Image 1 (cartoon, one colour):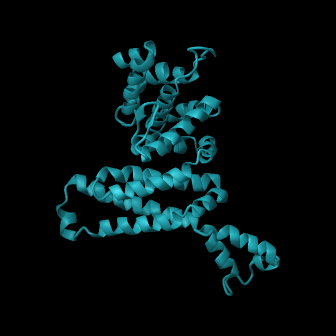
Image 2 (cartoon, rainbow, N blue to C red; image 1 turned 90 degrees about the horizontal axis):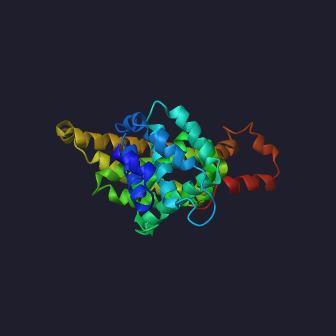
Length: 296
């Protein structure tokens, strides 16, 4: 209740610290019901986003505060049975310019976190930014995809993949953000369409993901049957996360190779003997080939 009072009644850095604490709690599914029951979501988070702030000196939104509240609301939306109502609130927020700016700033923070740089004098870890970005994307895919793609999220997710997979051997906690990163790419590829998948292929994600899959697969197979039998719960959870990551990587590779595979099948002497591709002239077929097979 003290955090609620500070977040709603104080201002400046003190208020930002209280909202930051709420954001940290929102990442835990066990804490989300408490945030709702105590009225923190209804009385603090939502009013902070939609409050009318007069334009002029001292009247502009604090970007850091709005970014943090957006993150907390996204985390809460996917971790509560009241998600449908909060999903509508989030969709309404993302339709506003301030909501779009908050998401773009989150993407900017992801990029800065990979460079160990600060934003608004605050340091972010990649995991702390990936979590709300992932939750925004999966709770409001139609509303958020265009904002994320315009903010160059795909490139930053590629950079995150390389960094996180390098951390996995020495930090088991890197697996969770790695899985989030891959699942974000899957959602973007599914909802934005072939244009986004082509952009991913241009960035070399297909070969990048295949390399990561080989690394994680080797790590998984390094476990002997005896080790698997004797492993404690924590290590078994790690193995389960590895299996989940491998499955997601396979899914992403499948999505990214759909267009090249379809073209190959259409031009195959036996499989594609009745293909409509043979009805196209050479120039059009060449354009399709250039679109499907992008040099990495």
